Amino acid sequence: MKTTIDLPDAILERTKIAAARRRTSIKNLVIEGLETILRDETPASPPPDALMRLRHGYHLGGQPLTREQAHAR
Image (cartoon, rainbow, N blue to C red; front, top):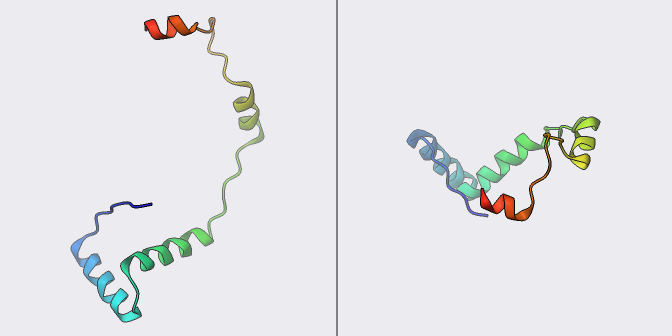
């Protein structure tokens, strides 16, 4: 996937130099850096009651709208 990021000029210049010294691309340096950060991160597990609420949905009061009522709004 492609994305665009804005980097300060000084950091971009240092990044280009680091990539050239390592004979790699800026893309690969970014990937390596993100993998290093994400490697140590443990995914947060959702609380059990959150999963139950998602399965059962939320009761917001009132009756559900029909398709026609929803489109009329």
